[in-house]
Image 1 (cartoon, rainbow, N blue to C red):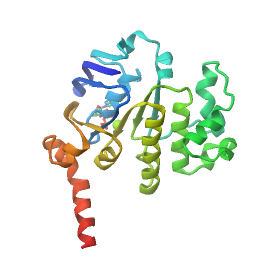
Image 2: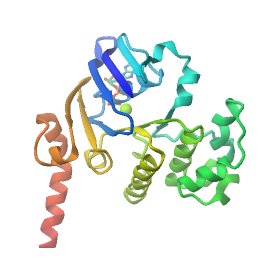
Image 3: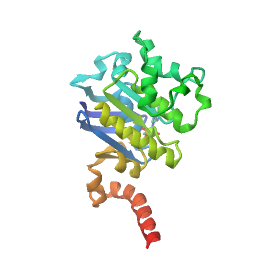
Image 4: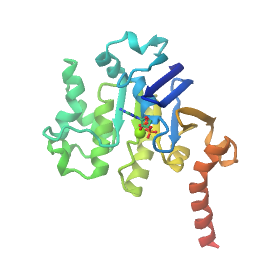
Length: 247
Ligand code: ADP
Ligand code: MG
């Protein structure tokens, strides 16, 4: 569904994305993991034209994204980033409905349905974003991204600002939503544990390149190469320490 063909993006001398070719199948849940600065956000942002490649081609459903007007493209792609990005002067309902309004589509009961979808009480529709918890805000951001029913969902460190318990619960909801709506989901994270526990395929980025493309089971089995296993060290060490505590 999403295909990149020899895509690069430089900032001065820095190759943020260095000649990457990859495809994401319809219905896949793919995590893109890597250290800070490895190029994850740049790669994701080229998919919805928030960034333009210097060279190479990004296609969605066989069509070059550069041939489509950005606003039309973004209608087909939900995008959520770390700082939730809700409009502070607009209610939860207005935030969720904004995409539909911009398209001149009827809102109907969609706000309530979207709140149900992310398992938030409908009663918060009239609240302002600053009257919500971090986890609630992030779920409203996901509801807003999905309100226009895009088939693709891009998440850039969307869970990164949440406390561990909320993060785990929102991640679980996300996987359930992905399955229920038949989405194609790409989750960017620097947290290997989050990638392993949500995605069925993990791409590892390092210095603008994809250095591993593996399943969580393969990574747990020690495959995927040096950079991938370097990122695996943290969850592995934590799991060992927890197991040791139980002995
Ligand atoms: P990640 O999301 O993995 O942390 P980014 O894609 O944000 O990585 O950044 C990759 C590299 O590109 C980094 O070296 C970063 O400093 C650089 N970079 C990203 N955006 C810009 C920009 N707008 N201007 C200059 N350099 C940038
Ligand atoms: Mg980033």
